[in-house]
Length: 97
Image (cartoon, rainbow, N blue to C red):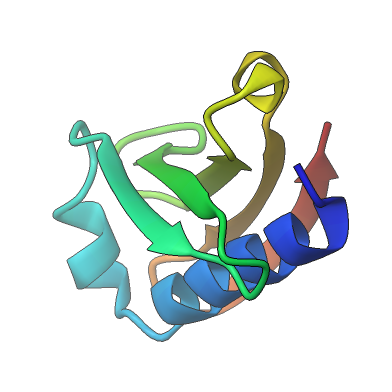
């Protein structure tokens, strides 16, 4: 997996998710979302997104996205996340490896 391209794919996914409202993201809690997309290198990348309550129901929500190319990287995908507060503000962001 070409890491620079995989990070670009992951960043695009998170940018899309950051455009959603708090209520739209809450609706995704409990539903794992997996999509495939083609990177600029022509390879197919798989993106998995999960949304869950960060600490308590009705509070902040955490959105985590992971990307791999279906090969060995599936055992250790690249991950990133963000936290959104009920008011729609972003609380934090972290790279997860």
